[in-house]
Image (cartoon, rainbow, N blue to C red):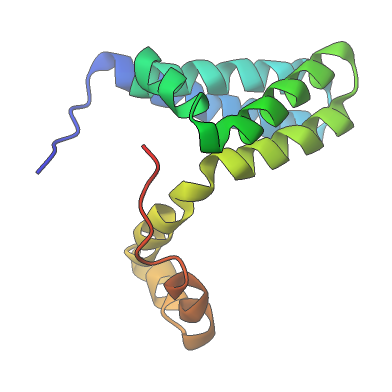
Length: 140
């Protein structure tokens, strides 16, 4: 069994990732404020890098099947920085979905184990949606 050791670097990385998501959310709430969106992107990328390591981050973003998501996320970030936040966020959202689509099955299993939410997700219609993704592997 692989243990997940939580050292200080990973704790800081998870904090930065959380702040990145928070700043991106604030940037969207405040009518696509490009400063908040850019800060959220920088914090998110640096948090992921600190959490899983530089080598794993580079391997993840440079995989052949993730290349389309990496390019669209990077171009979207560029558009946010130059002042087109709506178009940039659309590209970033597409890139995020393409990059992290392999993690949805793992997230589904995690959500099903949360007490109240798990009961809701065990309902027949919703369970059939989650059963489609069972058996797929995590991309890292």
